[in-house]
Length: 119
Image (cartoon, rainbow, N blue to C red):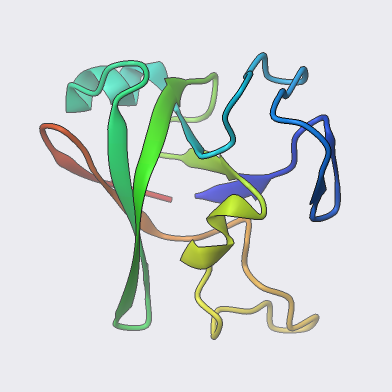
């Protein structure tokens, strides 16, 4: 999983719920997923899933994310920052800068019909 910012956002300040960059309106608790992955997992547009991050033997689960299809590489997902911050393990930091690894988080998706590992 990677975290991203929306159009109406400056750092952690969110000015609106619409993201004109990606055509998403009215919600930020979104998981963007490759349409082929969604088909494989039998997840439909706007299905609600849980996301669990995995790092060094620990897991963090976050509930009730809405899935939307998005042109993203297969077996990858994206979510908005700071909403997805709770999934970023505190101990998972870059070697040199010591910043959180918000662009590379191993996650599993628990949806209506299946569980699937994403990066």
